[in-house]
Length: 77
Figure 1 (cartoon, rainbow, N blue to C red):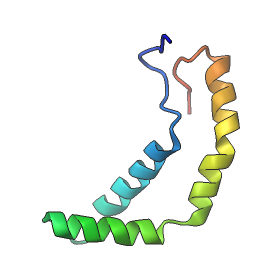
Figure 2: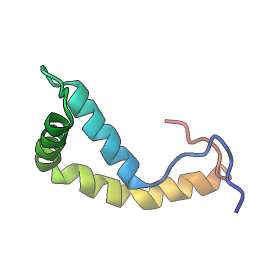
Figure 3: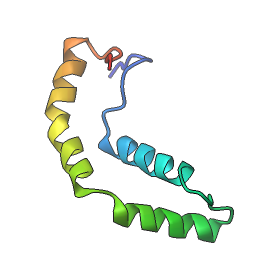
């Protein structure tokens, strides 16, 4: 299947990784070892609001429809 180069990634896990990355970057003391990173990610994962996951799941239909409406091109935010 052809997929335009500027098309959005509709995989919800990409948004979860973004959330986790932002939370790690916002920490006062960022992790500097693999162990610290693993523990920080586990902490942030546990603290992730269920509402975020619910919103991502519920938005899939709308995001897919928008992607189809623009023929797979970039979705403006």
